[in-house]
Every structure is written in structure tokens, then in C-alpha cells.
Length: 93
Image (spheres, rainbow, N blue to C red):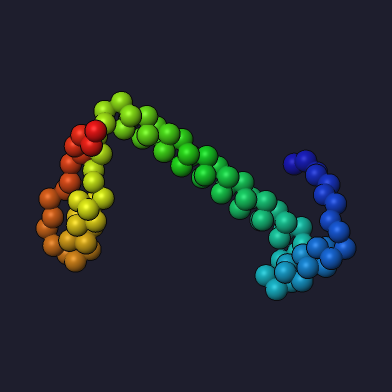
């Protein structure tokens, strides 16, 4: 395990101590958890960006998509416990 030093202004350091105490953690644990949470979110965002780019490229290649009205009707029917035919992609341009 390595050590990293961060500099905090006095106000933030005090707020950190108070927030950590409310969470029942040490300031160290609070900082570590916050960093881990932030890294996980950044990784999730990067994966979502990758998926979106992949799907956009596929759309540009095929010109096929499922219209929103079809998706919305399918979701409403499914949520209501009804049998619904799954919408299929079709050329939109």
C-alpha cells in the first residue's frame, strides 16, 4: 500500500472531520471511501460512454432504431403485467 499526501484548507479539513464523525468513520476512512466511490463512478461513466459510442456507431452503420413510442408502449405494458410483443428495430432514415 502506498501513501498519498493531500493538502486541505482549514475549513475543508474541519468539515471533513465533522462529516467523518457523523458517518462513524475516521477522516482517513472517509477520504479513502470517497476516493473509491469517485473512482468507481468515473469507471462506470467511462463504460457507459464506451457502450453509447458503440451503439451510436451501430446506428450510423445500419440506420435502425426502435422508436420511442414503441419502447414506451412496451415498457408500460410490461410494467402493468401484460404480455407485450417486444419492439424491433427498423430503418429510421
